[in-house]
Length: 380
Figure: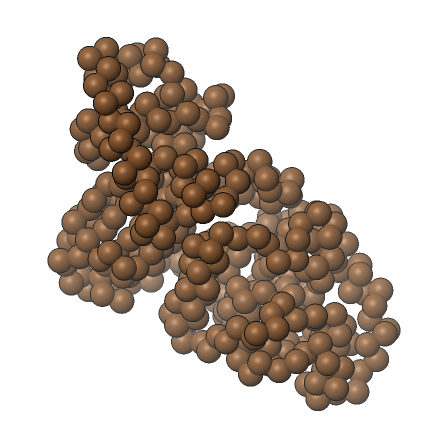
């Protein structure tokens, strides 16, 4: 029998959104669903990760908007309590005491993310779950949390299918695909007349994956595609982000990110070879692109870096790709142009790559948001 294990903590808004969908995923795929409460703070402590992650103001704003947009797409209320994150130990223990009853789980999620109730208060917990023995579940919650850590969980929601980990509400379609379900909803009608700004740096493997899709997306939605190169390291410094986020992750999250990257590459049918020179130096190829800012040149440089694993920051490699000495010399004159493009990205609220701006106002971050970008371009 196919089985889904859903690891969750009430303190995560994305876990709340996922909790309202995962039962339907299991039903459509004929799978059993095992609810697995765990203490997210315990995982963070084990991984030496802060409970409240330090985020740049731009990224923090984006994530709040992203959560709100996703809740709207799902038709769900979502209200961030001013006391977030609330303590969830008692609520999680009460959930275990009630045998992980889905009705109780949904009631706690509603209390936290819809009603703004203080679920850290034992009186509120008992109102929701009844007169349960919270202390008797202390060890069970600890064991669930240790199991999560042992299996590579680093955040919520975490979903397992046959011991394969999928992290995040936005990976439920992958869960459904792994269970043999359908994952492609019909696209809404095309309105046309839209603009799509694609912010990228050749240093990002996720931007590489997006680069292979963005031109076709613009064409099928009738949007005008505007390519916006930027120096990602300079963006990171401007917004207070570490230069190489992958290196700053916990080992569990880093390993999952690489796994997720491979899954997406397979999904898009894109060859992926990690460059030996990572992190790539991309000042020169970005300036080269500015000499001829076309989809073809962008694709040529991305392919060399991430399909062939070549060091495109090396002038000798660029000459081997067919770029002439005259072009390399002319690229040096694009210094200010690249500085200006990078500043424009920061001014637009960009904090990472790839980023997409629809009609100059709707910002989406990450190649895994291409579906939302398409919805916006189609007037959703």
